[in-house]
Image (cartoon, rainbow, N blue to C red; front, side, top):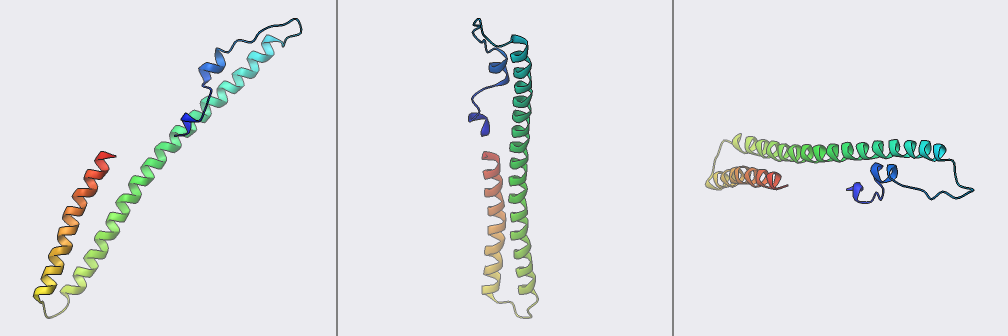
Length: 116
């Protein structure tokens, strides 16, 4: 993501040639400074890569937790409904509908996760 915004790579910096004039910079100083810059860029790229991976892991965990929360709410609702002494056809239809949502919803979410 961020790597598209970075113009220079460590290799670009390393291979950069400067023109030398009679009053030019000292090559040793320029090389030392560029070595520091290359090290920083390598660190930046590594940090960005790690953060992108962490972000993807956290998003996957969020999706799993949301699904668990939905399932828990549904289980509580089903438990509350089952504690009634009278069970009507409407209650049975609601439970069946909720179970279908759980089954087919989890299949759709797993298909979406695989596609991402």
